Length: 543
Image (cartoon, rainbow, N blue to C red):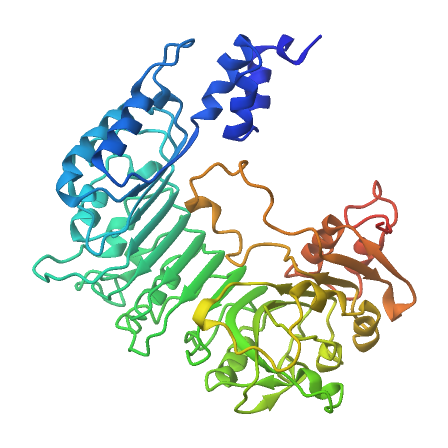
């Protein structure tokens, strides 16, 4: 019995796990395989047309029927990533072509329309495009760039808005004319009753969060109970942080702002508590930016905090003592960043670290990361250090950590790259290999799980990237390198063994749980019988 002898439903399920490229290879094997695998070939489409002729050729290819099934290729579309680079005068022609494609794409669930322009996309202001989008009952994810007032008004009247689960709006341009105003954001979002993931990229503060008539007593009528994940990027404003208390069931928040402006809705939402977040990511790409202001009282400690803030390390001279090898260079915003960490009281912390050869002051991690309750999990991501970090364990000495990840990542930062250290520059892999796990277990007696390498367990966006990436998720290999090694150590450092990455992930999940008990929860992690209890299971040695 061969694979193609299986029932059609089983084959459709098996082939659904193939990338477009692999599905195309299967199509060339046999006529029966072609019939079943061809939908995967056209399921995920990316197109960046630069001319109207290029777009017309692409549109005609998708509208043409398959030779065997007879169905238009567009009927197999699952997700579309369309970069609108066609001349603005040709936008009505592009809209008409997309209308033809979307009329056939009855099963499309993800759509991304981007543009390289510097003003609101004319394509997104054409009613015929929105009329067709409103008929797509399977559409669940929508990502739009260069959103302007007309686009927001179109979203506010989208017929299938109640079916959208993931929405990304990018307004990274300056509106020249101020004659047309935006509708309030909460009024638009209230029509998306199933929306669980929202991403906002705002260059100006012209999009109002609430209607001017809303007061502190009526604001509860504008809550958004369906939202679970929220990403906000507003470089020149700070208004949208007040969207957080309007979402009582939020679990993950990523926030970036470089503005010191007053929050215009602060008094209106002051009576609303912040939701009990599971993850909070604070993005401050410059050392001179300040962390966001939090309400006076949070509902409790935030289990996991991600600080995308370039804390800088002084590159030491060879004459300095080992403890001084990892002393930190503190920028003006860094002390407040540490205060912010302590105010959040996370159980788990992820830090972004950059090396520098100049300093304005010095401090040690162990001194700054002491808090109550104590930190249990710490991941440090070093961006292209170019210098050995052999004093890291001494700088962390005494912290009551149970999980520690040290990830040395090579990045191309262009002109924003840190000043290269004096002396010979070493590669990021050499930096990782020079770290001895026994030094960390000796300096941190409570440490149970340690990872050293050039990979990180999960993306820095807390897993919020995929809803807005409408490309084939099976087409690329796992971006996380496998060169990170993980160790487990029994209490007191009596036994150290190397474990698989999957075991480290299970251990981290247990350690970072909100109700983690340092005395009893680790019993689950230490079990050697995989069938007895869930957990890391048998300690194994990797070759």
